[in-house]
Image (cartoon, rainbow, N blue to C red):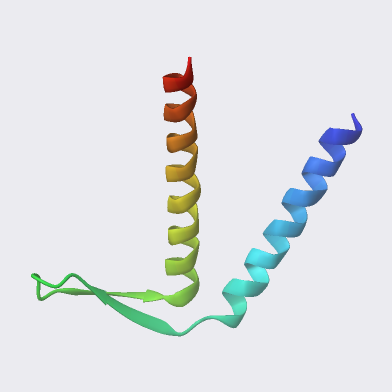
Length: 71
């Protein structure tokens, strides 16, 4: 019961900081791949949030793969 409350409180705090981060970083960046001429314009906070979630997702996949290999 207490762990569930702490988990919900931690998620709420993280959500609060993500909102503060997104409010403070409204500038746009241009992202392009070298062989292609098209570019993508994104706000900085969206790019950073996407990169963080991608890193978390890839980390979870590598941990699952290493756990399967160890068994």
